[in-house]
Image (cartoon, rainbow, N blue to C red; front, side, top):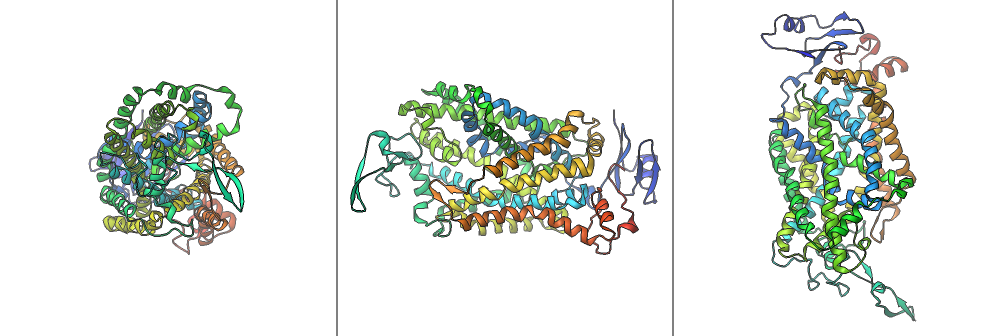
Length: 639
């Protein structure tokens, strides 16, 4: 059982030892040397000896969560996002139904959860944002912190626009007749068909209809397409894509979406401007409300005709799929992006925990809730898809879809056919709004915490800093709410985080497992919770997690295809811009490593060996810092 000695006024000889005027007093233990330091805030005894938990200037007064549940709900709210609803159920159906749970569980156990736990533990131990934290773990890899903050910055641009779409649908639902229920609106085309249950376009030839036209002077049969009212409302009524000319001709600003985007940023601002004490209260609604709606929709869906067939398609195992590489790639990718390591959010949230909080238990609880939510949402989605297929008398494969098309076309189309459709639409889109908001809170908090800890003056002006950040988001975001804004959103979605976040997390695993050391990391965890991670955790951190990430990277590159939006193919300059966006964050890692190597004096070997050692000090600010004079002392980590 670990023993803790608080550094307070009545701590007797322990306090005296910690606050001794000797700045560096080396003490030889049985297994390693420890250094007493005047800024130590706590002594913790573990199986390895006495650890001194350090705090840099200003960290002693770092705010903490009001309640433990605030932290748990914030993490759950971040991890459980729109993708849990619109991606996992379709992947399960596509990749063998219930059989898909096997590769999903394996990827979860050997890759996802270890990375999730790793980031939470690092954040709690170092109690700083991602930039400062990675600079202390391994100064050579401080660029990881800058990379993940930049990735979170890019991601918020387009993610908040998707939330604005949800807000637009929510407001549009305040009517007795939903606008995507009919084809007699100003945005509808002659090809709109109210009886079409397929949310996307459907060839007229599929329903034995053919249009003959004179093409280039010859009579030829031309295959045209008809569309559902939900599809036309989404793309023509709300997005107004038909008024744009593509990615480089995005047209005018859509003022309705602009106001919705402004509303999203106002909600985010007043939820985050006072720090975790305000956001911790807001997530009680944004994190819990989706579960209330999912439960209501589950009960309602179970009463619909065709619901049982939908669940059957969702879960019926097809074990022959297990031999296909795509199934394992989809499982790994879904686990990774669902849990969300690498965005700096987990690290930032955990940095506000008490140092002795049981972060191990928290990691298991929150990751389990996230995965169970994905699984449960599949029932809700496929009950409705089964209902749609039954109503249209078609196979469920004709209506099954994923992504924005599922939640902004397929589900609204099904809702419009239910009695009391206005009520169902309101709670569904409010659920989407809350699912998106608390994930957006997390991304923004990672940026705010990361920069505030790196530049402490920002903490004293948090309200202004947050206002400036969201002001930049809104101004740049005007391009995303133009008539062709969906093209910009799709481009950013493809390149802003996909490849770059994988490279960042790969370097995270290398920095922790090989530079910082799994044993040292295990000591840190033991010093916090009194339990040393077992062999499973050490093996996964050191070997399996890096392989897990490398697996996703390799297959992602092999299967790369240029970005498209439906039938629109982006011109090559757009893909080039996308790759530049992706590289801008990835290059932070080698770029900052090079900067560190040039600002610290000594031979190349001395610099390298020094910069891979953990430190509590900020390296690189003093151009005259000399490794040979300072001896590369490892100050403050398990000292």
